[in-house]
Image (tube, rainbow, N blue to C red; front, side, top):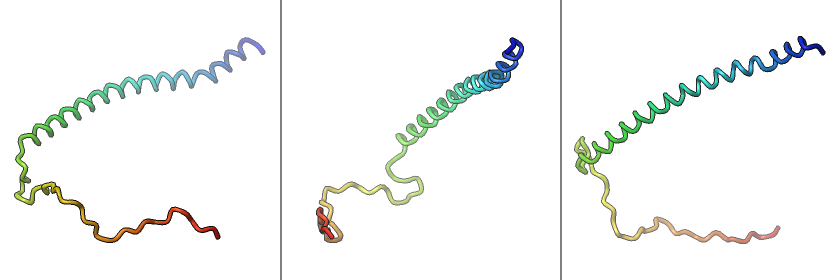
Amino acid sequence: MSLTTDAITAAVLFGPGAVLGAAALISQRGDRAESAAVRQVLAESAAERAHRAARQASAPPDGGEGAPTPTTEQHVPLATVLPFPAARRAA
């Protein structure tokens, strides 16, 4: 093969990869900047929600029923639970 044929083959094979690679690097750079902005907004939102939760009383704002208080009573089962046999019968 000649030098010209090799150059054309290399351009056809590597050209689209180089163009797409450059586009991918540019888009990743933009994603990093967007991700940093999104993380900043999420952090501010979480801080605001935590501040608002700390200021609120335990009663709901609409005057509804509050959260249930935990009890120390033992849980009473509603039905009898039978142990399932571990060994299977051979047919």
